[in-house]
Every structure is written in C-alpha cells, then in structure tokens.
Amino acid sequence: MECTVSWTGATGAKSGMGFLAETGSGHVLLMDGAPDAARPENGGQNLAARPMETVLAGTGGCTAYDVVLILKRGRHDVRGCTVKLTSERAPIDPKVFTKIHMHFTVTGKAIPGDAVARAVELSHHKYCSATAMLAHTAEVTTSFEVHEA
Image (cartoon, rainbow, N blue to C red; front, side, top):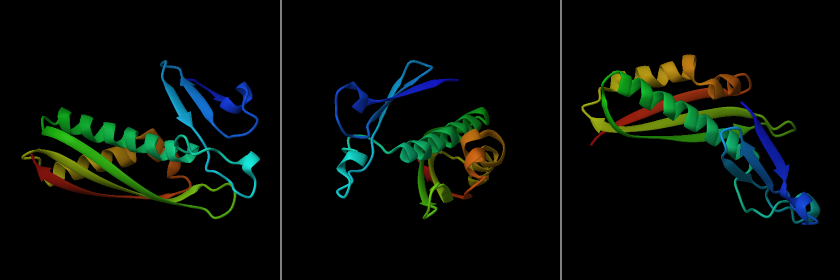
C-alpha cells in the first residue's frame, strides 16, 4: 500500500496548510488545517478535513466494513450500517487519541443483537487494523443498536 501527500501551498500559495493525498488505488483526498488567527502563516483555510479527522474516519470505515461483511457472511439481511466515532486527544504533542468510542447503528430484517455484538467484537479485536493501531494509545470502546428495516 502506498500514498503520496503533497502540500498544496507549494504550488503557488504563500501560506496555507492544505494537502492533497493520492492513494495507491488512484483516489484523491484533500486535507487542510484550521485557521490560526495568531499565526496565519501556520494555519489552514478550513477547506477540507483535518488530517487527524481522516485517521478517525478511516478507522470508522475499516470497522464498519468489517461489521457489514461479517453480518453478510452470516447470511443476515443487513441494509444499513453507520458508526459514529467520538474521541479525545492528549492535550500536549503528540496529540494522540486517548479515547475513542464507536457507536454502531445497524439496520436490517430480523438481525439478532447477538450477531451484531459478535460482528463488532470480531472487528474490534481481530480484523480492523486501524482500530488495532489506535488501541496502542487510546481506550477504544463500542456500543450498538439494531433497527428493523
């Protein structure tokens, strides 16, 4: 797997903290920093997600992918899955994630709660590489709810 990240300010802008990531699979992702009123040259323009937000989003995508795949392989009629991630970060550099909570909402036809619990548990402890990495610095917790479609 590979990715190339380029500073967009290097192409003519004198300030700004925007970055363009080009993934090995041929996709593009924009990232930017928050504006910094005290030091405008160090701040972004708020034009895209922050880099750490993309880490959190990638983790959500990784674990939701697992949960849907596990439920489908179990022949459950899953029709929707969302995961809301909330996090806390360390107050000093490096501001790693210290707590992450993932709340899953799974929608489908007659999906037993124990099947969702098992899928979330398998993702959390066995399959999701993003969660496994972040668990080295963060306490990762999960919860879920099931809705009938």
